[in-house]
Image (cartoon, rainbow over all chains, first blue to last red; front, side, top):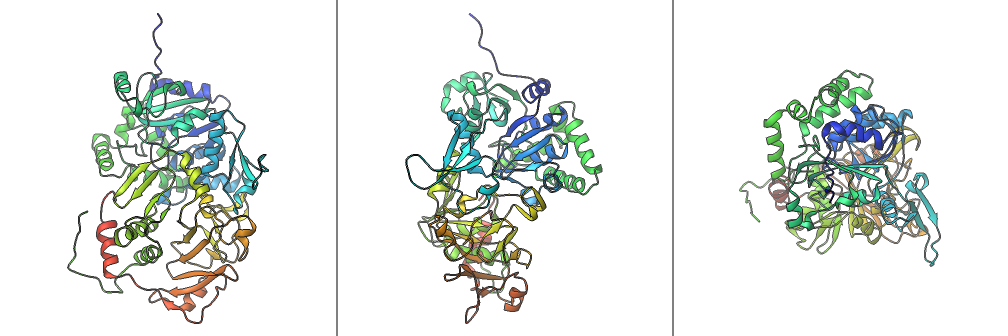
Amino acid sequence: MPERKTKIIKMEDVPAFLKDALSKGGRLLIGGNGYGNRPNALVRQIVTAGIRNLSLFGGPVNANDVDMLVAVGAVKETFCPMVSALQFGMAPNWRKAAETGTIVANGIDQPSTLAGLMAADLGIPYMPLACMKGTDLVKVHPLLKKYTPPFGGEDLYAVQAIRPDLAIIHAPAADIYGNVRDGSRGSSHLVAKASQRVLVSVDRIIPYEETLRNPEETTIPCRYVAAVVEIPYGAHPAGCTGGYAPDTDHLREYWQAAASNAQGDTKLFQAYLDKYVLGPSSNFDYMERIGGAKRLWELQRGASAGAAE
Amino acid sequence: MTQIRSAAMPKSSDYTIEELMAVVLSRDLQDGESGGTGAGDRVGDAAIKLAQLTRCPNLSSGGGTGYRGMMGVEAMEDSRELIASSTRGFDFMFHSGIQHDKFGNMNLHFVGGDFHHPKFKGPGVPNVSYADAVQRFYIYPNSHTARNFVERVDFISIAGNIDGPDGRRKRGILTEGPRLVVTPLCVMDFDKSTGTMRLKSVHESITVEEVLKNTGFKPIMPAKVDITTPPTAEELRVLRQEIWAAPGR
């Protein structure tokens, strides 16, 4: 009898996986929200793999993840409801690229993103939406059409199905077969089901017996997952549910570098990329570069004080 | 809940604009209501908690995922709830933009040029439907200048009264829309006959002239402009000691 295949891939196999899934660019969805549960280690791998021509989906709020991919020229267009540095202000590289026409920043919001993913999940061409009244966003939304519903009633908006070529997700844990514990009931379950392929980074691999003991804690069943890679602190500088808080000092360092880059002085930003994105020889090397054991302990303590996300 | 009593009660003038804004917003919320604000929004979040802790123990807040009662998050829903609540709605919501106009429309997408050739690109907004689906909303920008209070927004991200007293109804929106505008300078409400902003009160130490000079349109002027009622000592105590000082709240 053949053995059940595991979904585990090694960190060093990630670039090849990404190049295969996104060989011509395509639609990439980045999971998480704001500074919570973002697959930032995988985002850095996209930079080092030299992926180009991406159409980025995400939401509700994307931050340094999208800003960095735009800054390195990996992005053709964004379908992100909001791109912001949040408490640190605006996202300068994304903003400048939209203002100069380097990228197309499409107008879309989160309910319409979710509706498009739901349509893809259900295998139907569009999903009706009964909201978005009175806003100018409906005039520029690239995936929206007003239509008269067949059973009467007021006109509705149809959102075209969104089927990403690849979704990248970060979660606290998964087993070797790809049963993922997301730790929250955000949109990652829907994202995983709507996407053609799903790559999940996790802080740790849990024993399969643990999945069998508490199957209700599995938020993404393995059938939707193409590969799992164990990357401790893989959301950093974002935080991860129950594990560690966002690294605000590191985020400030990123946004300062991003601001000067958008103003035409690339030195700080290149130094950031060299130190944290292109330079690290391994994830452990990255963990040393962000401050090592002391910093990681501080971020863990931050999460237990309720500061995750 | 741990009650921290302070011996020193602040004087009525001893408060910040941020505290005043949270208090004014909080006082308009009613017990039993349900509403929400953006993630990481300090003032809107404090307004909700202040209402819960002083007058409204049955008030709940939440959006696409978590639902929060008086003591913290009580329920998690999945992401589809964001669509459901964008259709079914809430009682109230807090909003602010990079431009606000006299009809209470807000813009977070761009200023100058057009959508795909913006002079200034704004961050966008996660959910435009919390303007039409919620019963009422509050506008509370952290600055008030002639540049962010304009005659007409360049783009309606969040729909206020749109273009007049029946602007919402003409578009099939049956909810009240914008109710109060609470800025660092003043409080405005909306004139029913025109659907435009009307000066209601100015904050202590702010003059009517200052408000007019910093507003890019002429708000409707009432016969008498009040001074915004300052926070009470108890409101300040709850804000400072139970909301903003408490980690993880």
